[in-house]
Length: 286
Length: 336
Image (tube, rainbow over all chains, first blue to last red):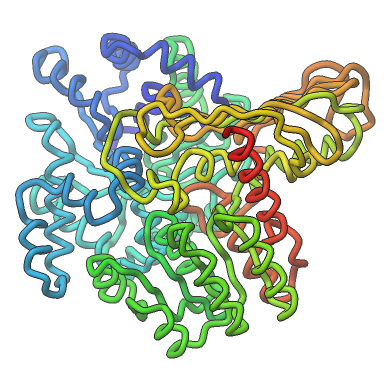
């Protein structure tokens, strides 16, 4: 993976410290053109990887990328699935079973429910695979070397001890999409232990890593210990602690940690994109 | 290890299960639900002992505490049964459909010296705790008004009816969304004692209200406005906020950001004259396992600590949730 990955929170009004800022972002990125413009600004500084959720609007962005093959020749997308609010809202409305019926393509589930027999392990894995395929549809023809599972799903299964599903996701995206699986989590140490136990060596794990210890479950110390002593491909997100840490100080901390393969960040303005990239390059070179 | 079981593995129940599953002091002894698909999953992958009949589960696995996350209509009878079997209870919010039912359960739990908690998770959000600390410090002076709000995108088109759209089962914006906001006001300021008038508005739903607008008076005589709308898709997810106006200052807070204006230096550490901004990043409780927000883990940590005798049973008790049920009744009455 490239050293710097460009994220998409700003496009979809995800802001961890301010509802006001979130509203402003929602206004700024109302049109898909505004998203493309910002992606192009990031590209102008050499960032060629966009890590994004499988939000409906990303389908439009993918169309633009497919329609301009020359312009986006080396451009990569790292999909993060699923866009959880879509499912969460559906579960509130329909319950778990009917939500799956709505989102799993074909009549696989319908026939399962009709059968009235016990659900087998392979049935759940089939459901997982069908859902992954549904989310991947919009990326057809685009280079997606890593496919991430969103933290709410990774951590839900982690807590439920359904490790097998996480391992099955890893193998499925390898087999079907020739991609590496990535796992976003708010519980990095616990997840690494579980993935290793499931036979996954050197997994890609994206987690909050920042100077103030924000969303680093179990504490900053254990994260630093794992980075120092364990083998995995770490992606640092929320490096600015949601914007609460001064940018220079925040980047300096992350760049000085061992074993961080990539840094994920998002920004709305050209100046902030440039600033963050320059900070990373400056501290990397030191 | 504390032996815990859960009844109702729906949206909140599954979330609780995951947090409980990762908790080092919890032995999850049983899960009860009506969905075959969910139960088969949980027994195959999680190795949980699953049941479709909660009474059978209790008899077999003998839990010390049970999480109840079934539709609100079922709370009263199930919780009463659990208390009668000397089991500690964590219930999802709202507590009961009537204050009479709640009253009975409070007395029963007290007589049996059982620990109780209701899942009003905003009590474990760092910014709101800080609001309470500032109010209690007296830095705002005498309080003259509050505005308590929540907006979000739950019902944004006419849609399929579920228990959430049935008022007799605990559906509607008042019991679901507004209860959180009322509970926050009760806790930070004082319990609602009089409702001067309310508008319960249906926007997309046929049988329940999608918005609640109400004028509230609290037992300390402070009055203010409640404005809650779950049909507002300009918010990506539920956004709860509280504004408190005092003679010496003002607080505006949501779950992420706290803004405090003081007319003069207050003596409260960390706050000076004029605007002061604090973020959740500085105020959030640290947790060992994170699923959807620190507050969901923190409330479970707290309940487990209470059961282990490490914390007093003072936050989100049945009694505090009863004040919210009572306010909901008053609002319904005033809207007639």
